[in-house]
Structures are given as C-alpha cells and as structure tokens.
Length: 468
Image 1 (cartoon, rainbow, N blue to C red):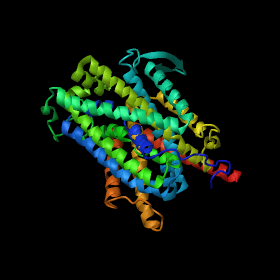
Image 2: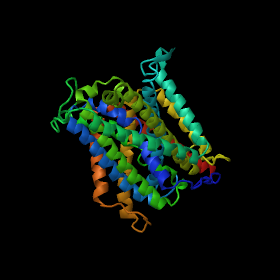
Image 3: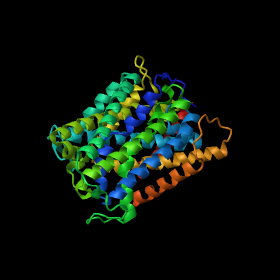
Image 4: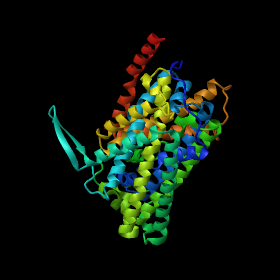
C-alpha cells in the first residue's frame, strides 16, 4: 500500500534516445580505462582477458533481455525493487533497495568518482589516493582523507545539484557526455590498430592459463576476481528501469534501451580491450601506475598529445557515468518511501523541478561517505558482487512469474526463453561462488550489508503498520 502522502508527481519527459543514453552513459565510466590493468594482476593470459570481457558482455545482454520482460510488465519507478517485490515478496524487494542504497548504486557512484579524481591527477599531480589532504587520530585509529577523495566528493555534490534541477537537465547532460565518450573510445581503438605499430603476438597465449608469479589464488578464483572488475564496468545496464515513470511508452522503450545499450557497450568494451592488448603486453598492463591503462595506451600511440586527449575523454566518461548513476538511483528510494519502506521524506517531489530531491540528497551524502571508506579496488569487488547476486535472483524471479502468473500481461517477452535466463543465472552463480572464494573479505562485506537489511525491513514494516 503506497503512502497516501506520496503521489507520484513524476512526469514522462524521456524518449528512447534519452533512455538508451542513460544505459550507455551509466555503464561506460571508469571501469574500461582501469579494470583491464587490475584484471591483468590476477590473470596474465591475453586470450582469457579478452574472453572475460566477451563473457561479461554476453552475460549483460542476456540479463538485459531477461529483465526487459520484467520492465515491460512493471513499468514503475524503482526497477528491480518492484520486480523482486512482485516476483517474491516485499522483503526481497526491500533487501535489494537497502543493498542498492548502501552498497550497489552509492558504491558505484563512489568508485567512479574516485576514478574521475585519479585521472584528473594526470593534469593535477597532487590528486591521488596516496596524496593525503589531512589526517586525524580518532580513538587510536588514524583517519585520513586523500586529495582524490576530496575531488570525488566535489564531483558528487555538483552532479547531485544538477539533477535536482530536473530530469531533462540531467538527461541532456547525459546525452552530451555519452556521445562524446563513445566517439573518443572508438577513435582510440582505430588509432591503436591503424597508426601504432603494436604486435599481434601480444595476444598470445590465447587460452593457456598464466597466473602472476606472486598469486596465491587458484585459477577459477583468480578468474572470478578478475571478472568482478569487468562486471563493475558492465554494471548499471538496468539503470533505466528505475526511471520508468519518466519514460514515454515504457513498455516498448525500456526493453529496447536496455538491450541496445548493453549490446553496444559490450562491443565497445571488447574492442577497447583488444586495442589495449595490441599496444601493450599484458605483464606491462598489470604494472601501469595507478592502473591508468587507458592513459598509458593513448600516450604510447600519440605521445603527450594522446595522453591529454584520452585523459580528457576519460574525465568526460567518468563524469558522465557518475551523472547517469546519480540520475537513476533516487527513483528507487522514492518508490520505497512511497510504499512506506524508507524514510518518508524520500518520496517528496520538488515543487518546481519535479525531481525526488530528498532522495538525491540522501544518495549524495551516503556516496560521499563511501568515498571516504575504502580504495577503488575494494569498492569494485563488493559492489560488483552484491549487484551480480541480486541480478541473478531477479532473473530467477522472471522464471518464477512465468510459472506462477502465466496470465500476467507481458508487452515484451524475452527471446530464447527459458535458455537465455537460465544461462544468465548459471554463469552468474559460477562467478558469485568464486568471487567469494577469491575475495572473501570484500564479498563478505557485501553479504553482511545485504543481511543487515532484514531487521531494518521488519522495523519499517512494523512502523508502517502502526501508522496505518
């Protein structure tokens, strides 16, 4: 039962181009320019590195095909929160929303904002995770803030303010940044293969597993942890579902945007990784300073001019990605508050700008706290793990609804059912298990934060009942 004081107030101002650019712009951020270097530190087989990006792309498209059916059946603000609530129970929907706020969306915003600051350090060398702005000794623990963290917080604050001013303002900014970043990435790929004398020998060995000499992980665990970095780059393909109440003809446009957007990104990512390998041997990729593989490759191709060009392109990319994430997430908290399952103020709509401004502020504040909580690498693992886990559960919910509610109106049906959703679930579960084995600390953090939502759910449920 929705909160009576929380009428929607959201307006359908977004077309299919806006929706597609939200998908592409939210996906392409920092991951592709940093993750390949991190991945090379876990697996040093060029063919396997590229294969992981291909598998990630196929997995993402399968997930988009599957979740497109749910988005068409339930075209409401909140995306997966609504899908899980309808497929299982309000508890499952709440746990996703809780985890999304605490870990997934806010974690991705924090991680990409840190990446933005790391690349800004190319122009301003004093910016970096190792460069401390100040340190405090609190209760025997040293608490420090780096210059990269300070720049990340400023980025989040600025884009939160832009999106408070209206969904059209946020979408227009997203369109500009998305077109710019895609053009820059394609230019980098073309320049690598046409104008740089790289080596196709860098692609060898193709599939023979080679782990770093210092690796303590077994093969599958190393592959899974490496894959978690790629999945970070692929995530947010479902972000457009959160703004369903602001998309025109959502039953048609949301599935189209999810599938087309994720497919385009999968192609771009695979080509970009191949260009990186062509230019730089994989052992050298793993040793790139600050993991800035995109900048290192561009500099190798075009010298100092290439470094400046790609750094500007990456800054546009990460800035646009943070914008897309900030735009989409608060619609979920709005939906939860409207159902009486989150702080009631989060369902307020700005009288002038018609945006969920309170939810935007909540998200911005928590994202800034996450910026202060850990490094880029840690954020990547536990956010990707939690996100993949809920994506798998959501796709299982699609199968569950097909069996239990065959009469449900489905304007769009996933192609290749049931093979496509079942393959998605099987591949996702494989990587979930081995991410836990390979990085138990950060995946454990993700699990703890998910389970911490159980008592919170019953608190909100009892509070809702007492207010009824």
